[in-house]
Structure formats: C-alpha cells, structure tokens
Image 1: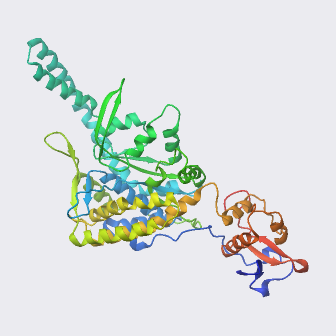
Image 2 (image 1 turned 90 degrees about the vertical axis):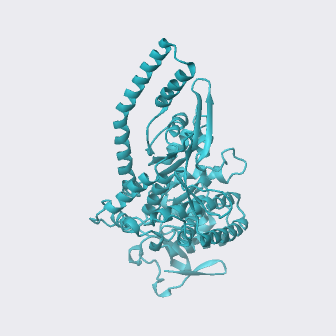
Image 3 (image 1 turned 90 degrees about the horizontal axis):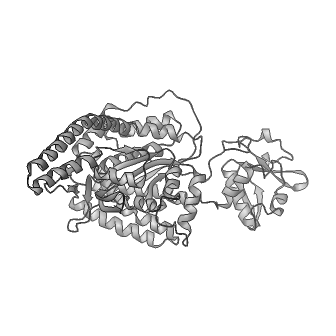
Length: 502
C-alpha cells in the first residue's frame, strides 16, 4: 500500500482497504525489502570466458545471494594472483604503470551466508594455492641439502685459506637460502614483521584472505603492533620497494611490496572504521577504508533451497593455473625483480584519458572529503581491472573493450562505496526508525500522532518522520491504516523479526 503526504501528514492512497481497526492479518503484506538495497550486478558485467559468468550464477543460485558477491570475490582473487607480477601502462608516452592487486570483499550481517559464498568463489584460488603449497614442501628437502653443502664448503674454504671474496660469495648464497621462505600465494594470518620477510621471497605479491576482516584491522591497532597499520597501508599500491630496519631482526629489503586483501565483514563491525574515515580530526583517518575499493553490500535475497552444482568448471581452474604460470615472477640478471608490463592500444589510451577527465569532474563536485578520497583512487582500480579483463580475454594489449568493462565495474562499485560509508553508527532517519521497530521500541498498533509526539527520531521534524514512514511503507515494513475517530495507526509487517534481523 502506498501513501502520499498532505500538509505534512500521511494520507492513505487505497481508501477501500482503509477500514477502521483493520486486523493485521487481513492486510495484504508483501515481503519486507531491505532498506537502501542496491540492484544486483548486471549479468553483462561478468566475463563469460573460462566459464566465469556461469560459475558466478551457479553460486548465486545455490546460496540465494546476489551475483555481485561471488563475481566480486572471483575477480578479486584474479587481481591477487596477478598482483605486481603484471602491470598495465595505459598511456602511450607517460611511463606510469598500474597494478591490479586490490582490497575488498563482502559486507553482510552474521547469518547471511556470506562465508559459503566466499568459499565457493575462492575455490579456484584455493586449489591453485594448494598446488603451490605442495611444490614448496617438495622443494624444502632440496633446499636443506643445498644449505648443508654450502655450510660444508664454507668450512672447508676457511680451512684452505680461500680468498675472502670467494668465501663471502658462498656465505651470501647461504644467507639467501636461509631467508628464502618459498612461494606462497594465500595467507590467512601474519604479523607485519613476518609478512615483510615473506614478501622478500614473493615479490609478485601475496593474498591475505580472512573470513572476518574486523579481526585483521583490530590486529593492526593492538598494543605492541605499532607501525603494523602503516606497513599494511603501504602494500596497497603494489610493486613499491620497502625497507625495514630493526636492531634485533636486522635489515629487510622488499623489492616489490604488494598485498591483496579479500574478506568479509559485518556492517556493525565496519561502522566504527567508517566513523574514523569520515572524521577529519581522527588520527585513524589515514585512507584504510578508502583502500577497500572492491566492496559489495549485497541485498538480502529470500532463501530458497536448491540442489545447484557449484563445482569449479575445469576451464576456469585451468585458467587460474595457466595465468599463474604465464606470470611467473621474473628476475633480471642483477637479481632484481621486474614485472611484465602490458601496453594499451592507442584507442584505449584515448578512452582512458577521456574517462579520467569525466570521472574526476564528478569527484570534484563531491562535498564529502571521504567520498572524494575514495573515488579518486578509482583511477588505479579502473586501470587494474582493465588489465584483469585483458588477461581473461587472452590479449597482449589492453583494448577499448577491456576499459569499457572496467568503467562499468567502477560505476557499479561506486554505488556500494557510497552505501558502505552509510554503515557508520549514525544511519539515515529511515534506517534508525527501522532499527527501533526491530528493537520493539515502536509497537504494532501505535497511533501515528503518539509516535510523532514522542520524538521517536530525536529532534527531527515531523516532515522527516513522514518521509521515513513513506520509505518503510514502500519497503513493505509497515502500513498506515485508519483507527478509531479518524486516527491513523501503524501496523508492522509480521515478517519483521522483532528483536532480530528482518
């Protein structure tokens, strides 16, 4: 039932159904919609190659989830596999290179089912990680044997009086073997110090995967972990060198400091980090949230049990494996790491420049500094995604079609970014009124006038309350019906779980 406003008060549109003291069970209730829910990702945004689109849709169908969630997680995992092993140079003349490593995940409440969706979408990455772990374990025995031989050779060389420079070379080789942690692609937990040492052996980057990102953020801020947050923030850009100097741990030089972050987080736990991000005077307003550029907040779907096939298509798993092999970390003769750089076609460069000018004009009109900071970083996201789509399609240069698809992803993800910043502790009037309904502070059958007289939304005007009511009626949360003596009464949808989630 819809409503309209006259002179600041709610009026019933469908007067035929506005009977006095209408019983709640007689109202034709619709399913209560999620407030502020965003549309699902258009299916054409999901690449078809290697069975990606088909796999995403099978996950969404199996777990009653919007497709934006598995699609984003799957593309995020590809961003992490590429890391800083490959970059894109979108200009023809300017040498600036962008890398596709990214941070993001799913924002959804506990019990929403985000964990199985993430697990399914990450299955190709997990299988690749398992293969890499097995290779690392197999090479461990070989490295141990090499270390024993070098130690023996050094001892013998010292006895024989070999030239110091020759001994130093053997000692350097031994030190490199001792520092070599082996190849990793996915980690689930690490201190900043351990991650730094791990990155020495994984110049192409690693992926931090965590089912609950709030735990990761809390770890960065705990006592005794000073500097951890700053170090992790440094890893976001990708391919930057980084040096760590400690008295006990010595010097650590990372040639390509690159980290991708994939995980889930509950809106309530995210809210305090959002509050820091929008507080210009907070010392934690350091760009952490602005780095979460591939975040989606899927709308709640009505659950439907289905026996859907969620096994990873062979062609998709093969693509992950071949991509990993194709971008094998390359080392120059000097021992320095370098990335594979993909150029852009001439028309793609023109597209890139025109998009930047258009996008930054939009950003320039934003009034909120946190939104400006977030969306301005989409230039690197755009470039990185265009490279991902280029590699998915097996091209040697980034094309206009790759960039056109990246543009659509940026447009879509920006909707979720704006909603993410509304996850702060202070919601909209409609969201606050909905929370009061779920908490039982607004009783079914309460008179509208009584609700307004109580200042249920604090010092907000009655016009604001009317607007919140309009939105709740449109979302099938409440109906406004005639009571006795011309009063208006609030009826609450019985599908609303008072004291829990809707």
